Image (cartoon, rainbow, N blue to C red; front, side):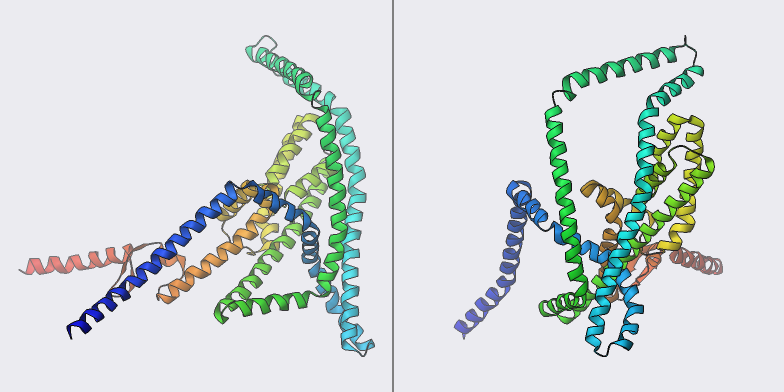
Length: 443
């Protein structure tokens, strides 16, 4: 009996030790994995080179997928009206679907190509004339601006002397920089320009390949979607797989709504800016409108990034026009932020203003201008996933999911499993005081 009791005690001890061993082993593996990842990222430069090389190789595929994603709404719109017509004329349904898909893809690519071609034909000559005029007139404008500044400043005043000294120091610095830095680096600059031209040619070649890839992707998009879902349901349990499929669908809705809406919004702002500047008869009308329209794609900061250089450019021609332009842009951005933007974009991201600014700053700091543009929809997807996870946990704990229910929370009553609020507790104390006072007076 004693031996059996000892065996059972040893078995219990072993049974209790096993979970701690598993936890310790798991923690050790996690720590080793974190250290390994840290050294791979920050210490092993070959990994970065390999990643950059892989991105270069996959660039045509990436471009093709982006083109297919952007063109897909046009393809769906054309196919919606073309497929019923072809089904009436062609007896074989599969053949009608293939013919409809091919014609829709061709029509969408031709439509996008025509729009880009027309815009370039309209914009490039005018931009060339504006830039040429700017290069020719810029020295005169700078001199006239200095004359205008001097007319408001007494020549004998200290401020005029400081401005003159600063201008002289700037000219001296520029001359020294040209002699010591710019001229010796001419060969490197020419080499960089040559490399840049080669890179542009490679990108154009990859764009052509990307267009071909986008055609294949659009022709078989249902097959690719089915294969992806098949893989998800094969690798994950049913509940997790459903969550993944739903999250991807929601992400596609967020990205599609944001990108298409932002492009349309920027196009409208560019056109309104061109009309407004034309009425005000300001210089560099088309150039400034293009700058304002393109930078408007960047949420929140974009309009100001485009307005600053444009205002300086116009102010060099006429300081008064520069002031008018700043007032016009402020009014235009108020109209865009309060009327045009909300009508087009709606609540496509589900983010508040604070999180939009946070996403732009984080994306811009990590990936530059592309990060500023795509940071908002990417963060919106992350925000959506985290919000759903938190709501799921709260639902399991039988707690409210609305944020407003937690604003005035003091604590969670563990016994009643209820949230206690400061306001209700204060009211309860106030109501209980008269009763206590009456009891004391009765005594």
